[in-house]
Length: 228
Image (cartoon, rainbow, N blue to C red; front, side, top):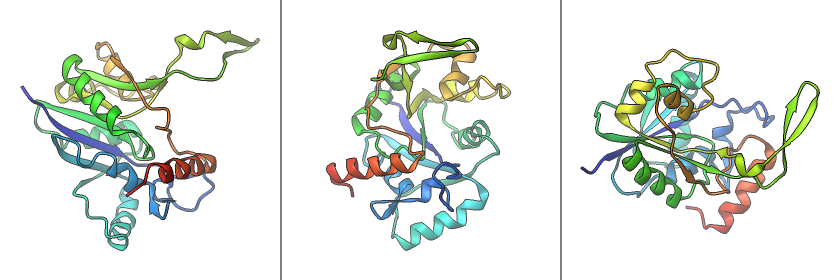
Protein backbone atom coordinates (compact mmCIF):
# COMPACT_ATOMS: atom_id res chain seq x y z
CA UNK A 1 0.00 0.00 0.00
CA UNK A 2 1.22 3.51 -0.84
CA UNK A 3 0.27 6.03 1.82
CA UNK A 4 -0.77 9.54 0.90
CA UNK A 5 0.88 12.26 2.94
CA UNK A 6 -0.66 15.16 4.85
CA UNK A 7 1.35 17.94 6.49
CA UNK A 8 0.09 19.86 9.53
CA UNK A 9 2.09 23.02 10.21
CA UNK A 10 1.43 24.50 13.64
CA UNK A 11 2.10 28.23 13.84
CA UNK A 12 0.91 29.79 17.06
CA UNK A 13 3.97 31.67 18.30
CA UNK A 14 3.76 35.13 19.83
CA UNK A 15 7.28 36.39 19.23
CA UNK A 16 7.81 37.36 22.88
CA UNK A 17 11.41 36.13 23.04
CA UNK A 18 12.08 37.83 19.72
CA UNK A 19 11.14 41.17 21.22
CA UNK A 20 9.04 41.70 18.12
CA UNK A 21 5.64 43.30 17.79
CA UNK A 22 4.35 40.59 15.47
CA UNK A 23 4.16 36.79 15.78
CA UNK A 24 7.56 35.27 15.01
CA UNK A 25 6.24 33.07 12.17
CA UNK A 26 5.42 36.29 10.27
CA UNK A 27 8.81 37.93 10.77
CA UNK A 28 10.72 38.53 7.53
CA UNK A 29 13.43 36.06 6.60
CA UNK A 30 15.24 37.28 3.48
CA UNK A 31 12.29 39.60 2.84
CA UNK A 32 9.62 36.88 3.08
CA UNK A 33 7.75 35.70 6.22
CA UNK A 34 9.35 32.72 7.96
CA UNK A 35 6.17 30.74 7.42
CA UNK A 36 6.49 31.04 3.63
CA UNK A 37 9.86 29.30 3.79
CA UNK A 38 8.49 26.60 6.09
CA UNK A 39 5.65 25.73 3.74
CA UNK A 40 8.04 25.87 0.80
CA UNK A 41 10.14 23.10 2.39
CA UNK A 42 7.25 20.66 1.85
CA UNK A 43 6.24 21.68 -1.65
CA UNK A 44 7.09 19.41 -4.56
CA UNK A 45 7.71 16.39 -2.32
CA UNK A 46 6.03 13.22 -3.64
CA UNK A 47 2.58 12.05 -2.53
CA UNK A 48 1.73 15.08 -0.37
CA UNK A 49 -2.01 15.56 -0.82
CA UNK A 50 -2.65 18.45 1.56
CA UNK A 51 -0.91 21.06 3.70
CA UNK A 52 -2.91 22.14 6.76
CA UNK A 53 -1.85 25.39 8.43
CA UNK A 54 -3.03 25.87 12.02
CA UNK A 55 -3.18 29.51 13.10
CA UNK A 56 -4.75 31.44 15.99
CA UNK A 57 -8.04 32.98 14.89
CA UNK A 58 -6.63 36.48 15.48
CA UNK A 59 -3.78 35.87 13.00
CA UNK A 60 -5.67 34.50 10.02
CA UNK A 61 -6.50 37.86 8.45
CA UNK A 62 -2.86 38.93 8.85
CA UNK A 63 -1.72 35.75 7.14
CA UNK A 64 -4.11 36.21 4.23
CA UNK A 65 -2.90 39.78 3.76
CA UNK A 66 0.71 38.59 3.73
CA UNK A 67 -0.11 35.94 1.13
CA UNK A 68 -1.78 38.52 -1.10
CA UNK A 69 0.98 41.09 -0.62
CA UNK A 70 3.74 38.58 -1.44
CA UNK A 71 1.77 36.71 -4.13
CA UNK A 72 2.15 33.50 -2.17
CA UNK A 73 -0.18 31.03 -3.87
CA UNK A 74 0.87 27.65 -2.45
CA UNK A 75 -2.30 25.66 -1.85
CA UNK A 76 -3.07 25.05 1.82
CA UNK A 77 -6.00 24.66 4.21
CA UNK A 78 -6.27 27.03 7.18
CA UNK A 79 -7.51 25.68 10.52
CA UNK A 80 -8.16 27.71 13.67
CA UNK A 81 -5.84 26.73 16.50
CA UNK A 82 -6.58 26.26 20.19
CA UNK A 83 -5.27 27.75 23.41
CA UNK A 84 -2.41 25.21 23.54
CA UNK A 85 -0.25 23.46 20.98
CA UNK A 86 -1.93 20.20 21.98
CA UNK A 87 -5.34 21.61 21.11
CA UNK A 88 -4.04 23.18 17.90
CA UNK A 89 -2.66 19.86 16.69
CA UNK A 90 -5.93 18.19 17.67
CA UNK A 91 -7.84 20.74 15.58
CA UNK A 92 -5.57 20.04 12.62
CA UNK A 93 -6.02 16.30 13.00
CA UNK A 94 -9.78 16.72 12.90
CA UNK A 95 -9.36 17.58 9.20
CA UNK A 96 -7.60 14.26 8.54
CA UNK A 97 -10.36 11.83 7.56
CA UNK A 98 -8.50 9.04 5.77
CA UNK A 99 -7.12 6.45 8.19
CA UNK A 100 -4.53 5.24 5.67
CA UNK A 101 -2.45 8.40 5.37
CA UNK A 102 0.82 9.54 6.89
CA UNK A 103 0.61 12.77 8.89
CA UNK A 104 3.63 15.02 9.39
CA UNK A 105 3.35 17.59 12.18
CA UNK A 106 5.83 20.45 11.89
CA UNK A 107 6.66 23.66 13.72
CA UNK A 108 5.89 26.78 11.71
CA UNK A 109 9.22 28.35 12.67
CA UNK A 110 11.43 25.50 11.44
CA UNK A 111 12.00 26.64 7.84
CA UNK A 112 15.39 24.94 7.47
CA UNK A 113 14.37 21.29 7.58
CA UNK A 114 15.85 19.47 4.61
CA UNK A 115 13.77 17.64 2.04
CA UNK A 116 15.96 14.59 2.69
CA UNK A 117 14.96 14.51 6.37
CA UNK A 118 11.28 15.00 5.54
CA UNK A 119 11.38 12.16 3.02
CA UNK A 120 13.24 9.89 5.45
CA UNK A 121 10.65 10.54 8.17
CA UNK A 122 7.81 9.64 5.80
CA UNK A 123 9.54 6.48 4.62
CA UNK A 124 10.38 5.29 8.14
CA UNK A 125 6.91 6.10 9.47
CA UNK A 126 5.41 3.95 6.74
CA UNK A 127 7.53 1.04 8.04
CA UNK A 128 7.32 1.59 11.79
CA UNK A 129 4.16 3.64 12.32
CA UNK A 130 6.06 6.78 13.32
CA UNK A 131 9.36 8.57 12.83
CA UNK A 132 10.80 11.67 14.45
CA UNK A 133 14.07 13.44 13.59
CA UNK A 134 16.74 14.13 16.19
CA UNK A 135 20.38 15.17 16.46
CA UNK A 136 22.94 14.60 19.20
CA UNK A 137 24.21 17.68 21.07
CA UNK A 138 27.69 18.93 20.24
CA UNK A 139 28.18 20.64 23.60
CA UNK A 140 28.86 19.05 26.97
CA UNK A 141 25.60 18.37 28.78
CA UNK A 142 24.90 18.69 32.50
CA UNK A 143 21.75 17.84 34.46
CA UNK A 144 20.46 20.37 37.01
CA UNK A 145 19.53 19.20 40.49
CA UNK A 146 18.67 21.11 43.67
CA UNK A 147 22.14 20.43 45.05
CA UNK A 148 24.00 21.38 41.87
CA UNK A 149 24.69 19.91 38.44
CA UNK A 150 26.03 16.58 37.24
CA UNK A 151 27.55 15.67 33.86
CA UNK A 152 25.61 13.48 31.43
CA UNK A 153 26.98 11.34 28.63
CA UNK A 154 25.89 13.36 25.60
CA UNK A 155 25.89 10.18 23.50
CA UNK A 156 22.74 9.29 25.44
CA UNK A 157 21.03 12.64 24.76
CA UNK A 158 18.98 13.57 21.70
CA UNK A 159 17.68 16.97 20.59
CA UNK A 160 14.26 16.38 19.08
CA UNK A 161 13.06 18.16 15.95
CA UNK A 162 10.07 18.16 13.63
CA UNK A 163 8.45 17.05 11.37
CA UNK A 164 7.22 14.18 13.47
CA UNK A 165 5.43 11.74 11.17
CA UNK A 166 2.81 9.17 12.13
CA UNK A 167 0.31 6.87 10.52
CA UNK A 168 -2.97 8.75 10.79
CA UNK A 169 -4.71 5.97 12.69
CA UNK A 170 -2.01 6.08 15.39
CA UNK A 171 -1.80 9.84 15.85
CA UNK A 172 -5.56 10.39 15.80
CA UNK A 173 -6.15 7.64 18.36
CA UNK A 174 -3.33 8.98 20.55
CA UNK A 175 -4.80 12.48 20.57
CA UNK A 176 -8.02 11.18 22.11
CA UNK A 177 -6.09 11.23 25.40
CA UNK A 178 -6.74 14.27 27.64
CA UNK A 179 -3.83 16.70 27.80
CA UNK A 180 -1.07 15.98 30.33
CA UNK A 181 1.78 18.27 31.38
CA UNK A 182 4.21 15.55 30.28
CA UNK A 183 3.19 16.03 26.63
CA UNK A 184 6.16 18.03 25.33
CA UNK A 185 5.64 17.11 21.68
CA UNK A 186 3.54 14.83 19.49
CA UNK A 187 5.85 11.88 20.06
CA UNK A 188 5.24 12.08 23.81
CA UNK A 189 1.49 11.88 23.18
CA UNK A 190 1.93 8.80 20.99
CA UNK A 191 4.35 7.21 23.44
CA UNK A 192 1.82 7.71 26.25
CA UNK A 193 -0.70 5.80 24.11
CA UNK A 194 1.62 2.80 24.20
CA UNK A 195 3.66 3.09 21.00
CA UNK A 196 7.44 2.91 20.75
CA UNK A 197 9.01 5.95 19.09
CA UNK A 198 11.29 5.48 16.08
CA UNK A 199 14.17 7.98 15.69
CA UNK A 200 15.77 9.12 12.43
CA UNK A 201 18.74 11.43 12.02
CA UNK A 202 17.71 15.05 11.58
CA UNK A 203 19.62 17.90 9.96
CA UNK A 204 21.47 20.19 12.34
CA UNK A 205 20.32 23.31 10.48
CA UNK A 206 16.71 22.48 11.34
CA UNK A 207 16.56 24.94 14.22
CA UNK A 208 13.41 26.34 15.77
CA UNK A 209 13.66 30.09 15.24
CA UNK A 210 13.03 31.60 18.66
CA UNK A 211 15.57 34.41 19.20
CA UNK A 212 17.02 37.21 17.05
CA UNK A 213 20.26 35.20 16.86
CA UNK A 214 18.35 32.26 15.39
CA UNK A 215 16.94 34.54 12.71
CA UNK A 216 20.41 35.76 11.74
CA UNK A 217 21.66 32.17 11.53
CA UNK A 218 18.72 31.18 9.35
CA UNK A 219 19.41 34.06 6.97
CA UNK A 220 23.01 32.93 6.48
CA UNK A 221 21.93 29.35 5.75
CA UNK A 222 19.17 30.32 3.35
CA UNK A 223 21.48 32.59 1.38
CA UNK A 224 23.90 29.70 1.09
CA UNK A 225 21.19 27.31 -0.11
CA UNK A 226 19.67 29.60 -2.76
CA UNK A 227 16.17 30.23 -1.33
CA UNK A 228 13.10 30.62 -3.56
